[in-house]
Image (cartoon, rainbow, N blue to C red; front, side):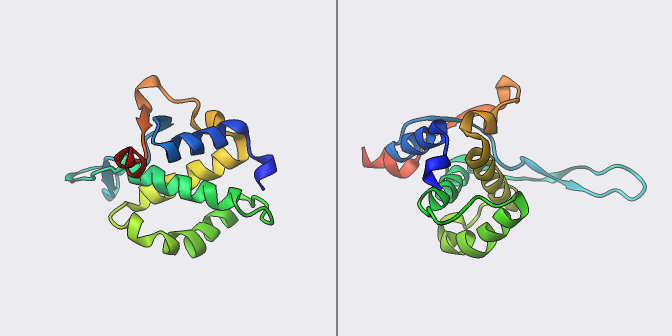
Length: 144
């Protein structure tokens, strides 16, 4: 699969592994929604969800690296891709993923699929500037 990967995805992965900042978008939500019978769902202000962007993106880059390092695999459609992540990758990285929300895990998988399919720049494009963040691999940063 590596021959079909866009350069900017490989560059983002290299930067992540080296502990350099990677421009991206936030994964997950700050809050949960609650259903209100007869009305639209509203924000559940009872619980503020802590987002761990470095760990969520670590999982995203694990997913990307898995697909890049398996040349016999072809990138499937989104639903099948998510099934592979659920069955193969989430259990493999369960300890590292402990405490991440479902939204963070699904966001990481979605970003990985889109990056593998279209490239890193296209995967993160289209957001207001205030939604962009930079993340760094904390393991690589500590090692320097």
